[in-house]
Length: 357
Image (cartoon, rainbow, N blue to C red; front, side, top):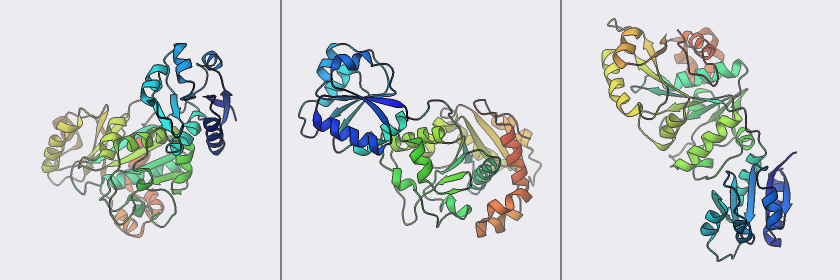
C-alpha cells in the first residue's frame, strides 16, 4: 500500500474512528496532530481529512485551495461544520458516526490511481422496440469477449431487467437499489467486486418487485466510479427521461441513437433530438433495417443531421437466444455480433467514435 490520505486531528475520538475506517478501506494514511505539520504536507495526499478540532488553526495558516479536502465533525460537536469547511477550503463535511460509509469509500478511492479512465457509451432507441437494450448487451458481450473489462448499465427500471437478457437474473450481486441514495465518491474496486458478472462483463441492473428512485448524486457517483473501474461502460438509456438516463447521456463520451429505417421512426427521432442535442457531446446514428420503403441509412443521417455510426439489420436468430437468456452463446453467429465488432474496432478510447460501417 502507498500513503494516499492524511488525517489531521488532535482529537483522540476522531483519531480512533478514522484509523478504524482507514483499516476497513485497506488504506495506509499519514496521521498528524498539529496544524503546522498539516500545512507542510498539504499538497501531496489525494485526500485530506481534517478534524473539527484543528480546523481553526489550519484556516489561520491560509492553506491553498485544492480538491480532496473534507472536514470531519465528531459526535456531539455543536460548532458549525460548514463554516469551518469553507474556511479550510473543504469540499465535503462528514459527521461521525453517520457518514462512516462515505468516509470508507473516500479513503478507498484515494488509493486508486488517477489515470486509466474508461470510455462511456450510451445507447438510446428513438422508438419503443427499436432494440437499444439488445444492442447494448451485444456491445458489452463483444467488448468483454475481446478482453475489455466492461460494465453494462441498465438505465430503465421499467424495462424488465437487462440481466434477464444475459441469463444473470439469479446471480448474486449488487443492483441499483444498493446505490440509490449513496453520495460522495465510490471506490472503483468495491464497485467492481460488488456487481454480478459474466466473464469480463459486469452488469448493473434493477431488482424485481418494484422500481427504486435513484438520486442524481448517487448516479453521478456511480458513473464516476464506473469509468475508473472499467475500460468500457455501456449505458442502456430509456426514452423517457429519468435521473439515470439523463446523467448517463451527460457523461457519455459517445451516444448512439438507434433508429428503425422508417419514415415514422425517423420523424420520432427528429423530435427526440430537440432534447438530446444539449445533453450529448457526441451523438451518432445507428440505422436499423431492413427498410420496407427505401429509406437508406444515408438519407436518415442527412435528414437528422447526424453522423452515421453504422447500420444493422434485424437478426431472427436473436429471438430464441433472448427468450432463453443465451445471447452470449448465439452472438458470434449473428449480424448483430458482426456489427458490434466493427463498431468497437472503430472506438479508439479517448477519441470520438468513427463510422463503423
